[in-house]
Image (tube, rainbow, N blue to C red; front, top):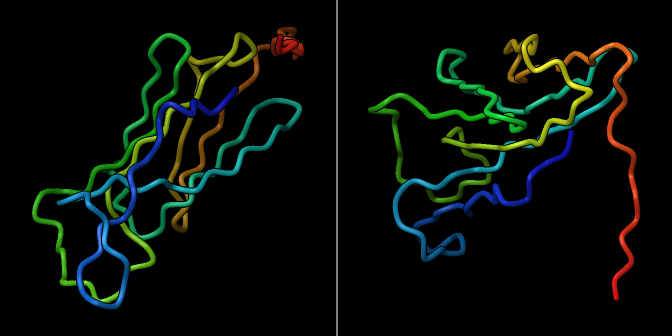
Length: 136
């Protein structure tokens, strides 16, 4: 499984004299931090997203892509920030799945601010071998 760099998140939008301003108006897409580790039976993904509402997470698999996203409900409060170092706003991350992942049996749960995604491995299927490409 590999992170797809084409899913670049947009930066924060700040107002006021206390923080840098971005040219991006309105709501921004935040990047949720993700840790991924392997067990003998699965690949485990931890998406750090505290303060979110469980029902507003969305995970889907299309082809060999796993998309993890969150969009807050309409009317979500937006105070006038003086300083904002963390956002509970929307995010979307995309990950490439290889043949060793059993995409039909992916499971997820949201516990203590962490979305825990378990990607079971197909018995007997190894991930694609890493090979180096020589730059000419």
